[in-house]
Image (cartoon, rainbow, N blue to C red; front, side):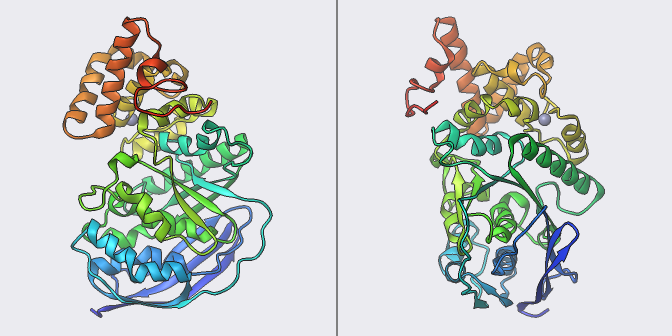
Length: 402
Ligand SMILES: [Zn+2]
């Protein structure tokens, strides 16, 4: 096999649903083109081909093959991809190799736009709802507001393109459309076969690569979106590169390096821990009926998405229910969780969360500790806010504005 990955025939074509971005990839396993389909009522195509480099940089570094792209890349991103970005990725995964990148520069000026558009992914999870609610929580609406919401099929729903994965994606798009309609935002979806280029390669599973994959899709909106909020999974306390278990552990370092010209990528709420995010989400009435944190397998996920119900039996459902209970908010989420099951099995569920925390999960340990603190405070006659922090309270954290 050649030691160079060659990308050519980079095209963008109007389709009945939006725009198809496509390129031919030689020297990297799959013989079919790499494809991203934007599904949106209207779409202004990206000027640069940054999506190609974002998609293929890690596979190139993993296989040690240089990357030759017959396309145009944003200058700062190409600079980073030839220097700091590769150094950061090698700190993260020392098995990656430094590679040469050959591509042209995209120097087209950005056309003027009316107003600031801010986008974020919508998965209906805690991080997602917290990203959408963060400006309101800081008292900055309407000066800053999320105007656009996105769903990307780049591997989060499974490594292939099987029936369960595609069904889960369609249901997520339907839920995205419903959320956008309810909140007056604009919805965009992207379907891609990118996962087929990652699945055969060692060490490139989704949690190890998700930021590069998702931002490849986000970069297609370079001509429309000014700021893209990528929901953080970890707070600054947990940021690390060297021993990072997941790519999310260094999103705040990575995101500024990979944004296309004219667009900024932000790690949304990277200063908040999961308890604080959950408190922001607990105030959101739409989250009361759409929150989806479940990590059940794809077939059951599809069922859960269509029913708007979490399984209430997986580790992530457990952690979220315990946190909401500690905050005194679980009752508001009775439509999406089996609250009766929770109350019948509280001791067992709490023990499961504690065990996961003991094994090293920081968010599970925090959820357990929050619960214990809240319940002991309640027994002493203190409010939940006084016990676990919040507006006007909290031992370690600055107060959030209401
Ligand atoms: Zn679940």
